[in-house]
Image (cartoon, rainbow, N blue to C red; front, side, top):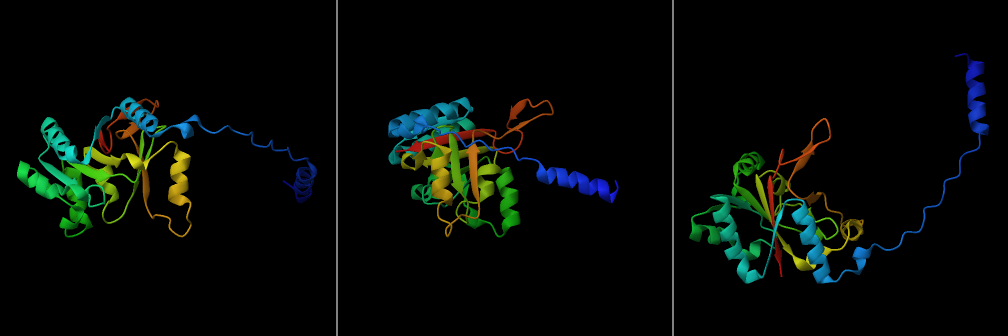
Length: 221
């Protein structure tokens, strides 16, 4: 292309009228924002079941018995559990010792490599959740030393304990909470919706290819 031709084309582009961008239409508030607590719980449970997850609603005093029932049904003999504020209240290492279940916490491992090897071999990982989204049955987890990211992503089964007061109607409400304060943005945050899922070259979805094949959620409260 000659220099004159190039300048001619650029001149025409500069003179061309730019299309006007239509203003974004006003959207009414999502109906989920009007949910009360029980309606959020019902929607959250419904969406999780559609994603092939299991959901149980328990009070604090019944959580250990529910976990024992799950461990028996799933033949769980080894667990790695987080030490976040939700899970720590149940003293699961002592709970496991009384039931012949080997329990480890992330701090038991000498380094990240040892933890990584163990977390891929364990029967299940138990974590809390910082947020939950009713409209999609999604868990939101902030990761730190007490709640390492691999613990919810690597074991073949993930058991999440979710206080009902951490349930929000929509994604947007959670994002405001997580990223609304520019001075306190978490370094790692994960959304989890159902068991792990991928798709083949024909876009056929398949659950359980990578990460947890089973997701069990205990709603606390």
